[in-house]
Length: 465
Image: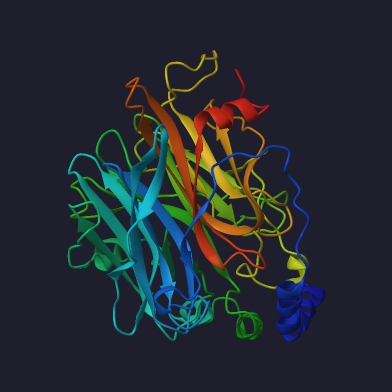
């Protein structure tokens, strides 16, 4: 690293508070993709101030036996990722008839699923276990007072990973089971930070449960191996930038016994930039393309990079090297190339899921066994325009983005369900998206919005029969 690069790091570190303030105060960005619109009227499920919580963030959504389970983090006194206690909360929504041919979702009260003293419970990953007729929820906890910068400075992870179960559609939950030693304790290298999901996990046709996530670790120079000058240089850069020298990649955990025990699955080799340097991959979700074939879609820690895609043909044990998608863009940040570390990057979490297309839709020769749907803020600049796309050819091509909400929006999660017509007996496939949104910024509320497969196929110019 040259002298210029070192000076840049120090200057940007000094200006960092001003840059962050500038970002927060910049005016709303013009929506780039709004050619097509789809979806029903959104419902607010969580809003700032509900039940005395400051902010709700990080949505996760599943559907089971006619019930929607909408999870998120409930942040007590601040919108921040750290510095205050956080609970994992849930609202259960049931599809109800309101008049001939019309239905609406009626939501129950907010219930606390996980609240641990002195901890912040984060990153919910719910999985519907069809074999056990249960909902499995995996989540992480950190000490309240430790930020990511504090965690990455350590020599060992300072967190826990838990699993809890419900066998009554989310009404009650088992005591959380600590699975940290079975998972983080067996990773190589041992992570300094592990983050699950966030958003729904996956059950394969084989019954295996998959929890996508990502890890941070550091490869520090060994004392005496590189000389005192190199060690001093490392120490100075690390002082100004806690994430200096850290690496980040997506990874999966899996369980073959209904979530009782867990194992470490494949670590996804990150995509590389034009200079052959790894592009760190972060939050991710997974979908099954065909039996045992797993697709993982990851956020990238590079403001100029698109989404990363990777594949497994052995149920998540190993993965291909990540490749950047030609179609799936994600938000960058103004001035982000001047920010010194990989934790001040663009990008945003996204959701992905697979489904079997109905028989009545004409098939194409290139059609895959299962189609894929994807949601994220469809903007190159910032977190606006929550949109959905779909692929019918195993993620080789994607439809244009179809907008659910053109305004500020951020994290999201998807699920699918069927609505049966009482007169004809026919069922219609529909989707639901739980996403962060607001008028001035994306973290004012978490909304629930439904849309149909017909809307996707009729409005999309790409992937069309």
